Image 1 (spheres, rainbow, N blue to C red):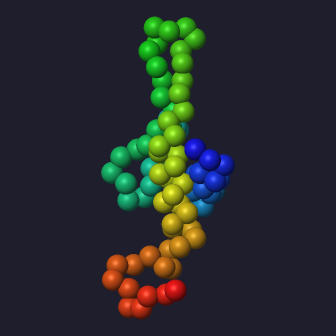
Image 2 (cartoon, rainbow, N blue to C red):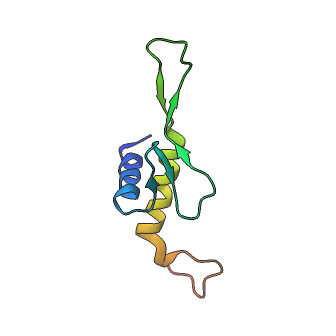
Amino acid sequence: MTDIDARDFLRALDHNVVAVDSGGRFRMPRSAVNEVIFWEHSAKLVPRPISLWIEPIITIGAVARLHLDHAERLCVSPKTIER
């Protein structure tokens, strides 16, 4: 994960591209599932390890970047090709 990925993820939160619930789960408006970014390991271990799951951070950040920076250019079968 890069600084840009982290920045894009935070932009998703700042611009309400993704919402976070009280349990720390993230959901985009048209998503069918909640995403989690922290994974709790076995409770048998003390202290209980917690891992940061990078994939949803990158995914949410990428969707936010497309939405915020490129929405006007997204389409299927464009009328003209811009160069």
